Image 1 (spheres, rainbow, N blue to C red):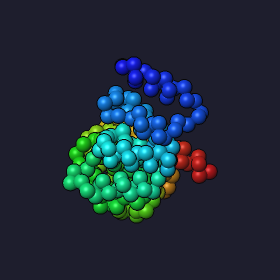
Image 2 (cartoon, rainbow, N blue to C red; image 1 turned 30 degrees about the vertical axis):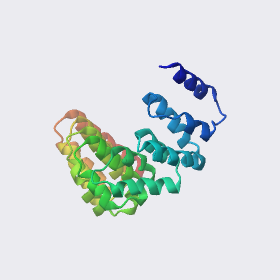
Image 3 (cartoon, helix red, strand yellow; image 1 turned 90 degrees about the vertical axis):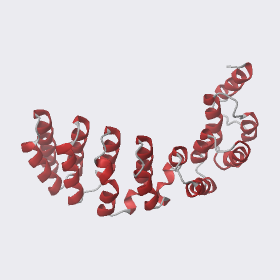
Image 4 (cartoon, one colour; image 1 turned 120 degrees about the vertical axis):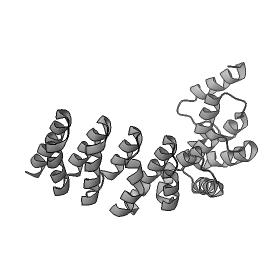
Length: 240
């Protein structure tokens, strides 16, 4: 670390509850600084809301779409920053992960077609970013639309993708969703089978109850059959 960076870190760490001036943050930011310091400076700007976004716009023009500046644009929660991020998505032939991650809190306004496009990407990071967007948009979709959107992700071989998908689906209580989660319980890994059984327990409908009963009789391991029975018993108690 250079002496100048040490001075900047000291200034950042001493500020306490007193916000740093956005102009100072903008003046000391430079792409030649270490990655951690650039990120810290950009995040401070993002947390300053509209005042921070004004400086971030200037930095983006000067230095281009640095990942920490894109991240900070998402942190500032300003409509103009949102519109800028959406424009970046529209201008891209290939989606940029940093832009998608920065857009997470605005998932409700992201078109469903874009989320479908994200889910066609094979990388785990891209799919997880799409799921973060969908967290804020799922309420706008019907059960059928949600299942169609997420079906391929439920077949993903990577547990984190399937687990995040289950967490979105378990907010619904439709019959088709309960049946699809039960299918994951039958065919999933140790982690995803457990998550699917817990999700059915959370749903708490006659459909999820029926699926739990069938699973408690048919799953191949004692551990999972016992968990299905436990979730079923908890549903009975909650209905009494």
